[in-house]
Image (cartoon, rainbow, N blue to C red; front, top):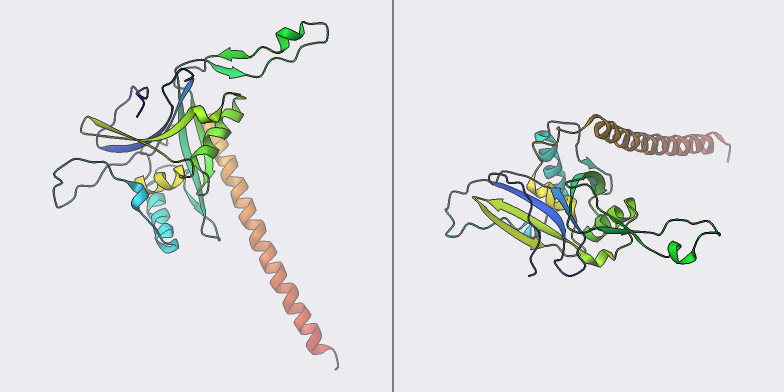
Length: 247
């Protein structure tokens, strides 16, 4: 496995997950999202201290619903996971950028009088170190979708294939890295790992944004309920009309 730039942060017995680029000649960016949890002690002592592999957890719909309830019960802020009627769920992940090399942006829009060669040049710049982005994602959002969304957000035109998602688990001064497949879902890992106790340490604008997202979700659920009851009411009115109409 190619070497990945390491983070300058440590937790005690915790599990976390991170984005980072492969260490080749075209590395630009390292991304990181937290999924911290204290690992529970088992009665039977393991011969070798190994991280928990959340991929092995095949959860039923009822088990996912129970885990979401347990997750929300541990959250100290308003950043709950929300269950949908179709069995899916939504929640937040925290992404931290760790810049290794400059990223490429589209060329600036030039006036016709300017040199055409200048307009064809890429613009490279460094993102501020440890830039943090909080994303609202669903249980169906895959790792490659998150990477692509982040690159689009910052209008980065580098190939998304340069970036890979790694699960990072630190325990007793040992760090474990596992590369996530493109179709793995970060929010599922976060659900299995549990909430981050420091998630309430957000800035005021970030919290306002979270409230707007939650309000939109609430309004959407209200519209669905109103529509469902309106349809039921119309059916009952039609049934009453049919009964009252002479045959």
